[in-house]
Structure formats: C-alpha cells, structure tokens
Length: 241
Ligand code: IPE
Ligand code: IPE
Ligand code: MG
Image (cartoon, rainbow, N blue to C red; front, side):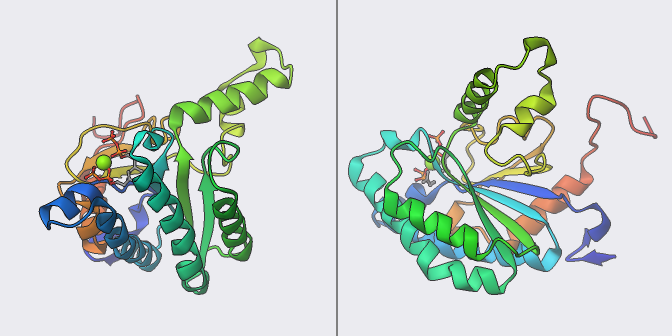
C-alpha cells in the first residue's frame, strides 16, 4: 500500500524532529525572533496532522533544550508562556485527532509550575489516545537524560555487572518510547544539539534547509521518502550485500 508515494509497510515507527530556525525565519522578515516561535505553531500542527494521516505512531519534537536557558531572559520567558498557551489552545484539537501528548525533559529544574500543570493536564486528558504519541521534549537534554537515568540506577544499588543497555533504557524519561527511526533537523544546521542521544543511536538522520515555520507535511513526507531509500544495517549486512 502506498500513500503520497510512500510505502506504508515501511514507515518509520518513530520520527523525531528538531524544530529549528524560528529566529532566522523572523529575522529574514524583519520580525522579532519571538514572532518566529509563534509562526512555528502552524508547522507543528501540520506535521502532526500529516503523521496521523500517514499512520506514523510516534512523533517527538524538540521544543526547549536544557541549553536554551542561555538565551536572553525575555526570549526564555516568552517560550515558557508560549508553550503554556499552545497547550491550552491546542489540546482539545489534538485530543479529538486521537493524539496522546507526552513530555520528556527535566521536570524538577527551572520549569514554571504553571507550565508543569498544563503539561500534566494535557498528558492526562489525552492518555487514552492511540493514533499518534506526540512527545514534546521540553527542558530536555540527551546528556541530562542519561545523567538522570544513571543517578536512579546508582541509587537503586544494583550490581555494576548487571547493568546493560536495557537497564539504561528502562530509566530514561519515557521507557516506552521506541528508538528513533527517522531524525530530522530543519534550518540547515548539521548537529544534534543533544536531542535524543540514546534513542537515536541507529536513527537515519535527515537535514533539511527549510526553517521550521515553513515546514509542512509535504516536507515530512519527503524526509520519509529519503528514509525509505536508505539502507539500514544496524552494524550487520542486508540480504543483497
Ligand atoms: C528553534 O528556533 C526554537 C527553539 C530553540 C526554542 P531558534 O530560536 O533556535 O531559531 P534560530 O536557530 O535562532 O534561527
Ligand atoms: C535545538 O536548537 C533546540 C531546539 C530546537 C528546541 P538550538 O537552536 O537551541 O541549537 P543550537 O544552539 O543551534 O545548537
Ligand atoms: Mg536554533
């Protein structure tokens, strides 16, 4: 079966996306950087709809990194408020689409209580949905996630020799999250910026030039097309090799 020229039997189960380029999109238009963040909301909703239509099960988006606290305090304040309002504005619509909203990131560090409340409410409201799991990485860093996992593992007193990859995976922010198949970054930057470091060990990386506010489902479908042309080996060899 195919849709939009894509093989529906070989869809990535988990797509992760670094939503980057909001500031440059705004600067190009003589707007404020924060206008770029606002414009990114439509892009997010469009790729969520695209992922639901196609049947992708997991979509994780990078909304605020543990390093983004280094930005000017006005921009940080804007992003806290913007994300809080975005959840208020969009959670019913996402709920009706069958989207389960989840969050990964450091909860007990710097995030305003009001935003944490909106996050918890949105997750609770949509917990039974199964069409798409939309995970929002907020106050998230891949290294911080591994540090937090190691702290829990050490505190549990397990024998070092019994620790395996599975032990680490079980202590990540969302142990149910599958490994990333397709990892996308917009805006032409070619770096990971600490996004899903553990889960992306064997992800296919796709870098696109488009700034995030201009990113739409067609770009997502193109990235999935690129993914389907790749030869995934996981360290082994495929039948035709
Ligand atoms: C990504 O866009 C959004 C966040 C990091 C919150 P940027 O704000 O990084 O935009 P550029 O990279 O400066 O253009
Ligand atoms: C990564 O983008 C974080 C998010 C998109 C939320 P950044 O714009 O913060 O990354 P760097 O600073 O260019 O590496
Ligand atoms: Mg950026």
